Image 1 (cartoon, rainbow, N blue to C red):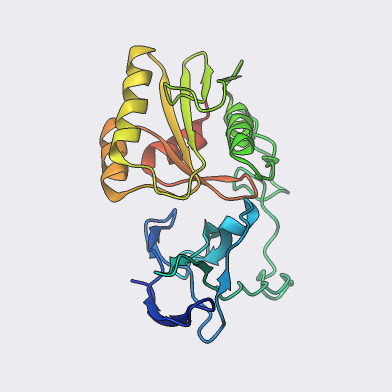
Image 2: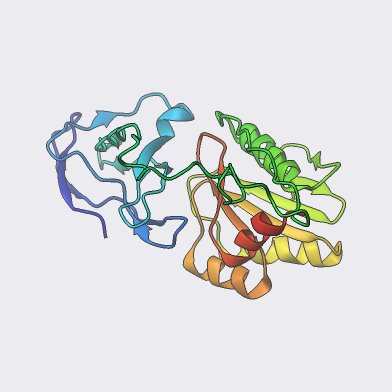
Length: 248
C-alpha cells in the first residue's frame, strides 16, 4: 500500500486523504509512486502525454520506470495532480565501485575473452524510441520485436477492432498505451488471436498487468513486457524472459 497523505484542494479548500495507486513492478513487487508530503497539489487544466507519467524507482530491484501520475478528483469538480518525490540521480560508476572487474560483453562473457566458436553472435544493443503518443508506443514495440528477430512486421491502423496492433510471420502483438493495467480478458483475447494464426502472441503495456492477467499469461505462455516513456520494454514473466534469451 502507498502512504496516505493529506491533500487540500486549492479550488474549494476541501481536505482529502489520498492514497496513491499501487501497480506491479516488472520484478513483481507492488510499487506506488512516493508522494511529496507537504507539497501543494496542482490543479489540472490541460493534459499532455508527458504530464501523465512520473519516474519511479523500485526499492526491491532498483529498476526505474514510468508510472501513472497520481491524480485526485475533488467533489467541486477540480482534478488535482499530486506531487511525487523525484528520483535521485545515481552517482557515476568508478573503478572502486566496479570492483576492478573487466567489462563484460552483452553475452555476459568478459570482453577480453573470445566467444566459443559455437556461440551465436550477440544481438547489437537495442536502440529505444522515445514515447510521446500512443502511436509511438506501437512503433517502439515494433522496433523491439525486430530487434528480437521478427521480420516483416506490419502495424495495424490506429485502435484496430481486433486489438492486434502488430502482425508478422508467426507473430501477433498488442500494445496497451493506457494508464490502466492490462486485464485478464486482454491477455486471453490476444492468445486466441495467436492460436488461430499459429503465431506467437506478445503483449506490451505501459501500466503493467493485473494479477489475474499475469497468472493467465504464465499459464498460456504469453510473453508480457512493460514499457516506459524511453521506449525500452522489460520482460515481466518467464515466457518473456525466454523470448529475450532465445529471440524469434
